[in-house]
View 1 (cartoon, helix red, strand yellow):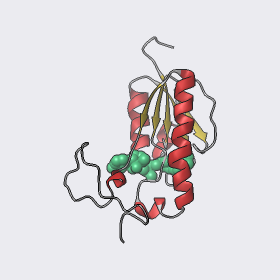
View 2 (cartoon, rainbow, N blue to C red; view 1 turned 180 degrees about the vertical axis):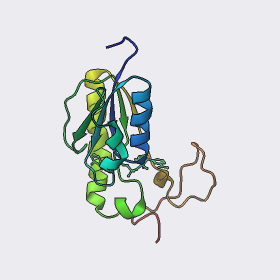
View 3 (cartoon, rainbow, N blue to C red; view 1 turned 45 degrees about the vertical axis):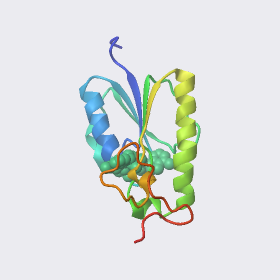
Length: 148
Ligand SMILES: NC(=O)c1ccc[n+]([C@@H]2O[C@H](COP(=O)([O-])OP(=O)(O)OC[C@H]3O[C@@H](n4cnc5c(N)ncnc54)[C@H](O)[C@@H]3O)[C@@H](O)[C@H]2O)c1
């Protein structure tokens, strides 16, 4: 392995953002482990990478422990659109909480750098547009944020 080559874990790697990130990392010469449970992601998003010597696809759920050796982690695993994340709120919460805890634990053990994706849903139904990092949001803590 070249000294600048990193082994990178992309969770949610078969999703919209993750699959493009996998493309970019492979193009830069890195080794990529693409992890996905295919809830909203699709094999077709990463089909062109299957068989690439630096690309490994892993069907796995981030709510479960994972033991791999990596240098960097991008934790993008979570359904992003309301229709998908409201389908099973308990599983969505597990994905967000247990998934983040599992990935942070993996980062701690391997001393990997980690990026945790968030969602603009943390702002609820915002009264400020666009939202800055200082804005705390307008969240309904006893119901869904978005009235459909
Ligand atoms: N797309 C955007 O504009 C945007 C903006 C801000 C933040 N985000 C955040 O970035 C992340 C990715 O967004 P996206 O648009 O690529 O969504 P996406 O739904 O296309 O991708 C999410 C991927 O995670 C996978 N996944 C879901 N639950 C999983 C689990 N428990 N274990 C393993 N894999 C799981 C899905 O199968 C899918 O491939 C999300 O957390 C989203 O909230 C997205």
